[in-house]
Length: 393
Ligand code: PLP
Image (cartoon, rainbow, N blue to C red; front, side, top):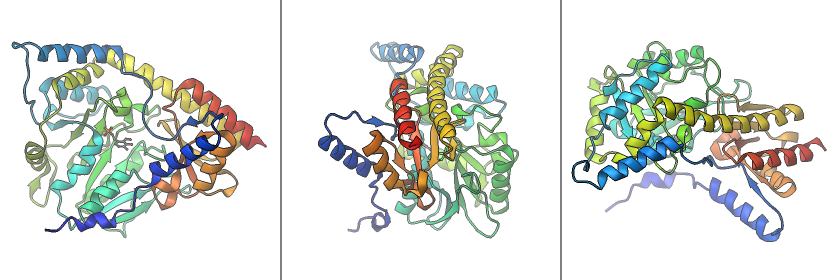
């Protein structure tokens, strides 16, 4: 018997554990201090009322013989897939109902999609990066190459013709850097993928935070339907981090190595996934209703205002940052050339504010720091007041 030895190649994921350790140590030594956490990416506002109503009604359906539901369809109920297709239509993107797979979230799908690809593909990720793309491919034993996101390119890594990759992960708006690709930039990635017979795995988990004229989906770019798979999630859009629902789009025309990728993913899901529960799919459909969109936009606007509060302070302080405008994340350069962890300790000790050190997301994150706008308003205002007071000195 042998275990999967690729796990030995994973870098120990100490980032959030180390943040918690340092924060708890500080609190133990300074019990009178109030620490504000703008570190992790979880939401703080509750589900929208219309979503809760739909979930309750869904649960009620399960209590009666006439409306009881058993196993759902592997790919999600048609009414939800139709609602998702209509949602794409609302920003001018054509996604067919039968190209949508409903899931329990984007993280699982981003990790599981590797099942349909051979282990000897080369995977390209941008650096810094959402760690799931890296770790899931290390587990599978794939070779990983990195495209640098740096201050010079506005933290929007672009393809290099000299690098050959088969699978490309892109995340826009980006976690952790908050940067978002333009149409022209995405077109360059689509052209690169097409030329190299590669597949783009596009994570649009933060598309609902886009405020400028930027692509909300990779399918807004010509040619993407024949080279890209898209993941999306209701976690940040509608506060579903605990409720769990997302969706993956695989165009019917997407083929590689003589195989249809939609058919491969359907086969994979039918084998390893038994769908999302009825109350959750009812709740998800409510998100896409007219009233649902109105209600979730109020929550998104609340986070966007938090982002504005944080970024205005950085503007005042003259600190370089990306994000905040089209993303809930603000990615800043640590002042006075401090290292990521050095700045973490400085902020914790002197302002009692917790953020996320950039180097936890990859080599190019060293010297940078992530703050999130998902906090409570009063806490955000107070954290910003403390940061300004500290850094103005
Ligand atoms: N993709 C990105 C880029 C994320 O930042 C996150 C969560 O933080 C996810 C996916 C996970 O989404 P879900 O909650 O739907 O699994």
